[in-house]
Each structure stands twice: as C-alpha cells, then as structure tokens.
Image 1 (cartoon, rainbow, N blue to C red):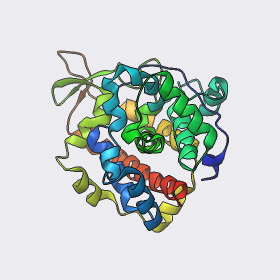
Image 2 (image 1 turned 120 degrees about the vertical axis):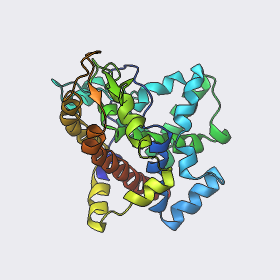
Image 3 (image 1 turned 45 degrees about the vertical axis):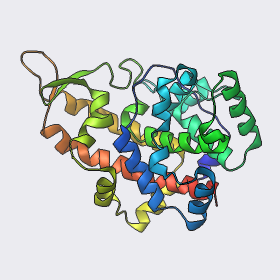
Length: 285
C-alpha cells in the first residue's frame, strides 16, 4: 500500500455524476471487507461505530445527498479522465493543497485521517463546521470511516473514473430490457439487481479469492485502482452499442450485455472489498 502513504496529489474536473454502486453493490463491497478484517481491526471498528457493520455504513455517503448542506462531498465520488488525458496528468494538473476534489484524493485523505493524521482531522472538521453539518454519530472518525468505505466502492465502478463529456455514462441513454435508462445506472445498479440476490448471498458467491490474488490486489495503490477502471471503459462502451433499438434509436441492452459484463462487475466488487479490508486493517492495526 505504499502509494496510499504518499502525500495527497490529486484533483479532477467537477461534473455531477449520479450515485455510485447502488445500495446492494456498496453493501457487497463492505461485507467482503468485513470478512477480511483482522480481529484487531474488527474490535477497533466496533469501538468506533458501535453495532453498525460496514455494510450499514457503506451507504451513508449516498444517503446524505438529500441534504444540500453536504453537497461539498459530491465531487469526492468520482474522477474524470477523458480519452486524450492520462490519470497522472489530471491528478497533477488539478491538485490544490488542503482540498479534496475527487475520489482518489478522498480515499487517501480519509485513510490518513483514520490512521491519526491530526492535520486532516482539523481540515475535515473545519469543512463540516463551514457547511454547518453534523458528523455521523457525533464522531469525525466515524464519518471518515463511512466515507472511506463508500469511496473505495466508488473507485472500483468503472464509470466513476469516467469521461467528462458524457458524465460517466449518465448522458448515454439506453434501453435496459425495454425500459429507458442510462449506461451509468446500468453499471451502478441494474446488472447487480438483475441477479435477484441479497448482498450477503452475492458475497457468498464471489468472495473466494486465491491468497496470491489477495496479496497482489492489496499491494496496489489507489492510482492503480483508478487506472484499472479506466482500462475497462473501452470494452464497456463498445458493448453498449452492439445492438440498437429500431424505434427509439437507442442502444438496447438485454441478456447478452450482463452475460458479457457481469464478470467485470463481480471482479470490481471483490477487489474493492479486499482492498478496503487492507486499508482498514492498516488504519486500525
């Protein structure tokens, strides 16, 4: 996790993306993380968050979207990297000290806060005071924990490392089994919900990584996670246009689309959970 420990060096163009993985997706990632925590981290998190499991905390960052006072958090859910840009160039170009403006920076910021970084704690408490919002459970660290859980899920959703001009697929209208939707929503929720599984059932099906895979995934830094999401985009967009509805002219997605792309969804959820566990084990170790 050496890149996690580097100084913050990351920002991005702001565009209003929709929510990330739906509630089920975020709970899947969080539940996987819960199952990979050390005993020490489990106890420390119980002491901090009480009876709430990580799956319960995982959706809080989307729940607060209903409160305009928390709008300053919205850009932290994603990062925009267009086809003619590199991730590294975007991060270097948009970095501003003492600020958070994208999901990569948010993960690093809240990880450091949970490890005890006093400066980040002061910065975040000042942000909450400025916007007149109350921390979750009255605790800055509990708030940071809930946000970190959520943002690790976000960065593994490929369209949260999306293109500016289509708002991470939000502007790409599609027909999902005949119903109008958009590409972002298909990846956030539709393919997961189509499986008709609870989040715990979904976890039971996919949480069987090889030990070597766990070690490899947990050795990568946050920038690598973002780069992986970028790497999935070309095929993701291409498969959306393989069939077009004659009447509406919209891409039509039905059984073939999830058949081809659900393995990517499962891979991203599993990696997100395993990597989140590593962050929390280190933060509370």
